[in-house]
Length: 541
Image (tube, rainbow, N blue to C red; front, side, top):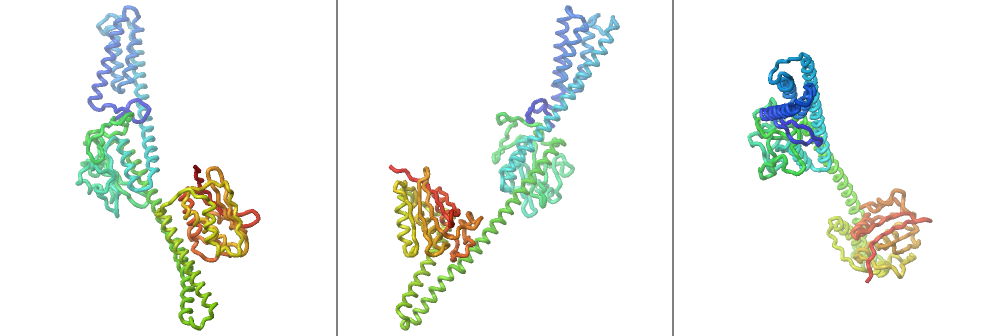
């Protein structure tokens, strides 16, 4: 398997292995010893023999930095022999005329062995630290990548792609469905293993044990298979195949250094498909599988929670809609039916004033029914995004005047105080929809305030916006109700509520938000409530 040397990124250049690496180190050691000998021969006439020993010690350090411990120790012994042969008289012989040199030889050999041994140990520690850093980086990248996905397939695909990057290999996840795994349901269009190994993946899913190349189970397989075991079920199978990565759907190999700044990491799988995975590689793949399974558990839990929330909201909306239909539709229909039946059965015997009252009742209830159905349809159109705004510059006083004129029968007995400055800028709105907002706010005030109490309709410029306020002198808002009153089908807890489907204020908020504005409600000093609408002002020519 690949080993690494030096570096600080955790994704470093792979070191050659096997016979090629050994002969490379032998060549380095031989070259350094030759260079050391040539330097010593050049300095032999100027320096004492004991000083020339330093040249060979430096050479041993250089060899220990770049070669294995075995080569370094051998080079240390050969360096002492070369020093004796070339630098100690008589030259070109191993005979020592001065026995004091034996102490030099012994000291030189001990120092060389210590240097080579310690240097090799430091290199090994550095390599292990680099591997641990690379493992931590890989797991951090995996956690950060998986945290950004909320769907099962996207989570699995992101995990498989990152595994392929870290191991510079072909990685794919086969998702399970109802206890079955299929190679057709995979995270990549490219299938790196033959279809015949689908039975191995199913075996791994059924037993929850790893299998494939480098394991006791199906060692002849091309891929290495790991189960993605979650808290309650096994979500699928992670398959990794040694060799160069391939682009999805093309089968074209992607070299380890194909991307700028990215090198084959310490956990990159060898291109030799017959070589087994190392223990470190299998351990890291186990961690990848566990983290992916946890992420899939989280994704499924979020999906279940979201589905549950949607079901609850749907059920609540259905209950509210049924309540609105059963009461607010049935009541006007019953009134219309009763009045019409009375007119048909006793038309000739009814006094004229009763006749007129029944007709007026039919008209009012029909109008009420029409408004309710219109509110339901409008809310549906806004939620589906089917409303197209027809915006233009309109003076706010024209919109407000049209609304007050239309509501004049309902406002009978009420004092409406308007405060619309003459220098108020025009608003860039759909006049029909904004008119509906003002209408709904005024009707809401009529519904929840005592008869005869005054209403205020005011507006003012506020920077690049125009603020519209509908104020009343009713009981005000209950604490905590300020935001809820704009929800669909919410009718409030006031005792003065007079029915309704609870859609008027919800429609107001939908219209205002469609105009990139805002609406809020708060209690008025001295009693009452204020509904404030903020709309963007238009630009005058």
